[in-house]
Length: 546
Image (tube, rainbow, N blue to C red; front, side, top):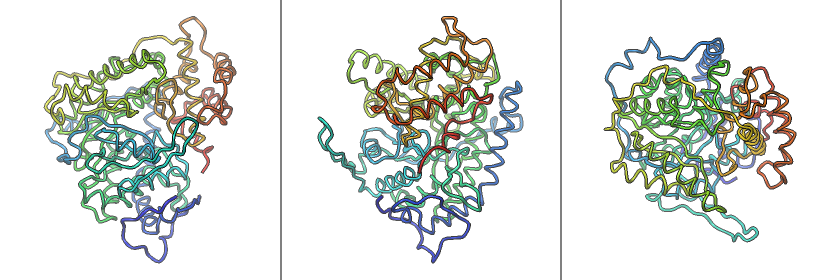
């Protein structure tokens, strides 16, 4: 690991007591110097009681849903929803976000994404990164080098592929950097403060800010964050507490750290006004995190037999409940002067089949046309090749920097519209596809790779969660059948799992191929369990190496 230049106050003689690092890698002291450790201790003590209270509230809320309850708009926050107010002004660097690209924090990805022609690059410590200690620290170093402007990467020659050297374009040609820390539910097991694990998201955000905030502030580039997995206004308020604390400790102006919040849980769609209000001095927009949102719908209604979703390929954004969610987000954001960002196109190029590739690109164009026509201010792609496709659609239909003038006062998305279950079927191919995605993603994740191309889609934790939670719900809701009449039961699951290694062929060519058997075992355990684990990555994290 290279040395990270710290933009922070001088180091004290020793680190603040209370913190214990449970892993060591080369170069670690440069990434985590004593002043940063002191910040982490102070931050944990300020935030952890509130985090635990909110996680307990999540469990109580899910118990209510499991008992037949339904999410709805809050009665105690009517005044926030009905009164007129707007968020703080948006920084110039974030006014035009028509196409954003996301991905992990390895050097090649970061360079290619910043050079890609997208308006924004979201460097992802959450769904696209397997949180090994080495990955996390190396990712922070990579981002610090990118901010400094000296990030480079050399790929050696391999087979018919020549050696290649990657460098950054001039700063004015780069995408704007936004970092996504982990959600409130994830611990950082390698860092303990007062004997408790530090919140993973606090670690990600604080380390990034410590090393880069002043340089980014000097260039009017933030720091900027994407906040994931929020469910309630109170969780947004907790991020406000945390970010204000970081700003105070680093001597930054209050509100310097700007955020975009992903609306990717079902409870959150009923509190979008409230979330914007809680973060109104620093929030610039909301994002339709569509894949996690579908997963959250499944998880929220896991005990509701009338809300079992069809196979994953039939649950698209034209489904009424997803259309209502995205249009309500647009209306809410534009009323408050905030961006309404569209969702992810997970397709990747199909290089060996021109006809299939054109069909895939046509689906991307249709999706982006739907978003820009509805009033979204920008969209996401998972692969650089999709940037020109999405950019062309937004350039044609959005000549301005954004569409805040599209108020969508026609939208009437009530509770019933937001939770309406779509109709469809479950095919054998759909069932087997879910099993394959889960196993292959789990194997790669356990091997340290957080995003994996599978059948021309970029799969990350969010898309894998859809497949995993669908399998569980189909197995645990009585009377579910494939469209050929086959009962969906553990016998079906076991037979598909048993045949999977032969179906995959030579596992050595697959990311994490050496852990396929472990992934099959883990998926079997999770699918048979009488309770749906809230997140796939939580039990898997215990098996993740350093």
